[in-house]
Length: 600
Image 1: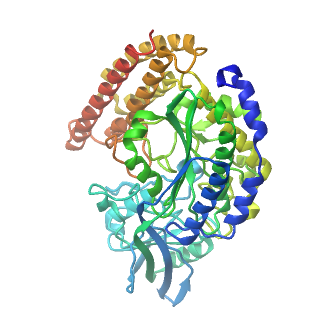
Image 2: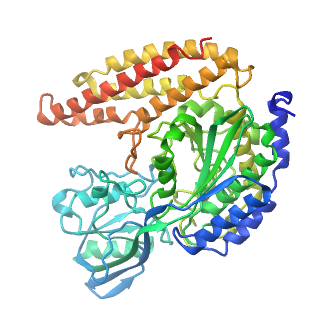
């Protein structure tokens, strides 16, 4: 029976009723006996285990074996030398500088940077490289800095730029969390290799950190730091399954997640791996119901390569992604205990209404979203691909606070994230099934909708709010009027375009007018996603640091700090002029993308 002979609602119900957790349970049981460190035998075992399941079902798949640049922490130590010798347990994050057989010795200076209040601020840094913040260059130069939080790339980069000799991070709880501290996204190239951290970085737990800070407050403290990391190019598995669509097989949705882990990594991300495998099974079972192709990928190098696997794929298949990919969907940390709420979910503005409706229809719950962070495996922003989801279900905020939990970057807000305690006890199979329902409904609606269900009028509205905010910050020192005028013209054209799109929603996918409208929507993504999320070129990768909306215009916030006519103000104005040119040109390109598309 062809897709067109069955209603979309009936197809959703048929696929939802086919969902099962039997294979998910088997995967989680198997993965609980593995440590899926990238480049390791266990990671290959995990990938081959999933590949064997795919083969048994007949799902077409490819197991690639690229060499990825990884940094795997092996050991770290912190020894107090003055005032009294003692040793503090420590870990080093991936891409910290290794001291090898040597060590780094020095005096500690405490620099307050605070703990993140929520996931939205987890990757932020209050320190500027110019020294504007809680500490200046003179205080930090040549010292070993003690500060709060996780060893996130932005904090590490900012403190290193101020001349710190080494860094000690006081993690927010009893556990010490694994992590990665480089701003380089994926494998380094000639433009990014210079950003590799050149100083050792370690993390200690909060009780030890507070005791150490008390010593620093009382008088001079001198320490010795040692770090050891295994760094280099390693062959890793990239597993990709592909289930072709019936009507437009050239167009595909990429749904993906990482297969590597810290320790057992059950909540982050074995539950995601199980979800991807179950999606492959049910979509293959119902392949005759899919109008477009679904491509399902498991990435290595997420945790010790800064998204090296997904970046390799984005680089290697860039032209195919550019020409054929409709959207990318990240699956990370679903199905964890107590994660009963759908709030703060990553999605781009054009997917806002679509995601809210899909989650409500799949679970009966309302959802809220936020701008995707420069994190996860969002390695496709520079190409310009609409993205939605990363983390999904999460613990209600009131429950998190009742438990005394601090902000973490996964596991449904369970603080076992990136620790030895991320084990089977974090899994909740009822929640995992709920999350699978969300993925099925969301993916089917992208795969089967005649016209791609992404509304770029919402992006234009976001741009309007962003421009208004930047204009308020800049005041009379810079005029964003040309960008606002270009945006107004685009909004008018988008209204006309989507008015005609509405008439196409009941036509078949192969209809020429439908194909034309879809091509225009993909073109809008190729233009507006990079404009909103990147500073680098379309086939490059921006640093793993927070990126503000319309980043070329974000320097507007700095104008108020400098007198009119000063050298600093003129430098910012020059940057804003060039940024405004990029924005206006892109908005004009977006108008041309819709002017002749979807009108017949």
